[in-house]
Image (cartoon, rainbow, N blue to C red; front, side, top):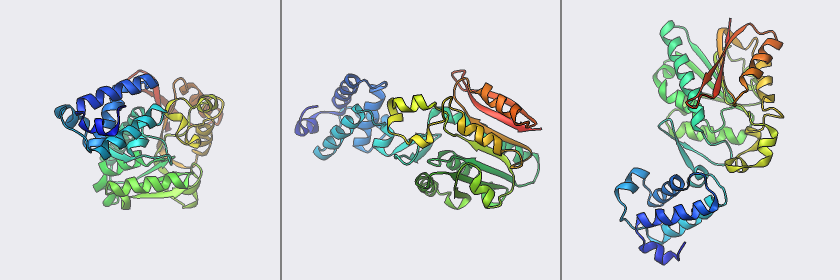
Amino acid sequence: MPPAEARALAPARELVTAAVARLRDAGSPSPRLDAELLVSHAFGRDRAWLHAHPDEHLAPAEAAALASWLERRAAGEPVAYIRGFKEWLSLRIATDRRALIPRPETELLAESALAEIADRLARNQEIVNVWEVGTGSGALGTALAVRFRTALALGRIRLSAGDVSPEALELAAENLAANGVSGLVHLACGDLLEPLTLADAPAADLLIANLPYLTSDEVARREGSIGYEPALALDGGPDGLDVIRRLLRELPGRLAPEGVALLEIGEGQGVGVLEEVERIGMRAAISILPDLAGIGRVARVALL
């Protein structure tokens, strides 16, 4: 990158071109997207504005900040951590190293949960008890609370979210507050179902979990954003299913009759979920929901 004074004189289109070249040389898998996100962030705008204003110029201070961000991205730091937020399901979710960055593949889990809750609300007038396990940044809980804000306020839904990491729960609380739904979700700290069990919460009609499902070897390689995100939220053991198996063993007695658990999983892990359910003798119907790439991404476990 040229000196700050020269960068201040360069129009936005040239800043993007230079940023793309820098990030491509550094091995970024998405140099143009990364460059446009960071340049538009330096302007305090979005990518649509950037495309519509290619001749705008940055002030020297913002140009210097951009240069710093590009170096951080070139070193591998995720754009979401550099900007401090991620756009996800039309929400702005604050992101930092306290929790995982919300990913596009988790949108299937969110959409499945939204559909399950809507179906139960339409079915009868009973309260729908929803638990989220491993809430992390709170992105999923925030999305559910925003969508069902009125039903939560009226007491038609009870939504609780837990995480083993106090730091992650702090971030989740910040995201709930930033989206105006902090009073609608109960947060609790503890391992898996522990906080909800100790709180004597009602059995869950719907349980949602995006737990660690990468293998220990994948986490140890620290490729891409994995090298910056908390290992506690990523490492699922030798085959990626250690934490998910522990949750499945805790489900009997904590799911309500005809309750449903939705679990995000990695490619090929559906068989392992089925085997564990059979091993513990849980009477349940299991289906694996594919994402847009055809990868089995969500395991739906419905009590019979």
